[in-house]
Length: 146
Image 1 (cartoon, rainbow, N blue to C red):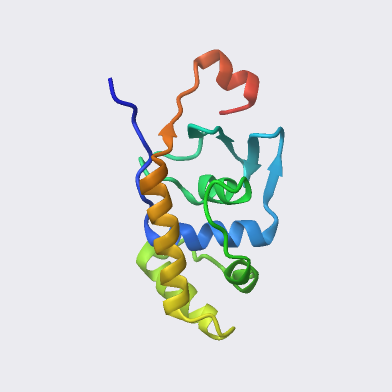
Image 2: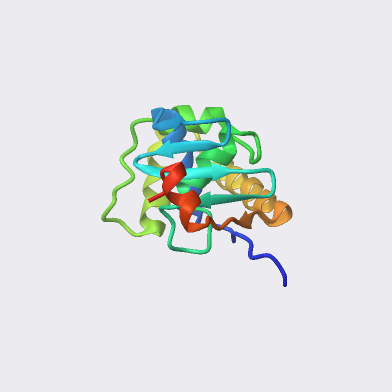
């Protein structure tokens, strides 16, 4: 049986991950378990578990944790500039990406740079093939994954 792997996320999720890192919303509970905006993410060398993701792509919380752990590239420049950007929860992902790029342009971070960074991260995800980790019922409550 082949392992199930996380797929490449919508492009806006990578921008949102950079925003999460810049805002300091990540609390590490252990060396590989983080609490991010109320959701729990576990990062292992072979994969990722996240209790807040109903999709098969890596969400912004998992991406942020992987960036901090050095498993995915991180852009300090873009992250610093995106700080304070409201990710507009009522907007579509394509609208978030467009508005974030417009916001960043005011800080001299241009679309070409943002697109290049997103492409780097997406290529890393394709290459590394992070496994979708599953938790057993008893592990979920012990680790606080609810």
